[in-house]
Image (cartoon, rainbow, N blue to C red):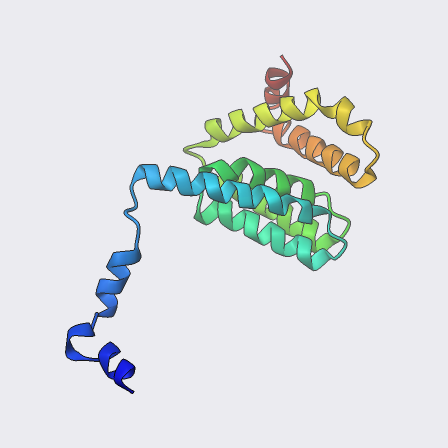
Length: 175
């Protein structure tokens, strides 16, 4: 009983606001960069769920990736290419619910980022070239689902780089 009185005594009161201020980090640009890198590791570890057997798991992964791109693009910048890769690969999913959501999400992301579209397209070109350069290694792999995922991502990149508005993007990426 004495221990309870000591914890709740007049000198021991700490307001909730003081507790929050004590434990909240200072959110500087360095902190955002550090947190973004740590969250990118988590995002990369979730990529394997894109080959999960249940379509609802893949759909929730797609929702998470779209939310990273649409709501956290500035703060989780290191995760953006991974999230975009997942959406592109899942846009070729066998379940229409997953593929339609991902196709819509990719289109929405590309149309909402008009100011940063060149930066995004540069990243897409770099990822496209990286996948092309590693394609032989991936196709020699035993895992058929990994091969299919790589080909789906490659197909998605070709579609994005060959859209109707700028067909010369693919040629620029290949040169």
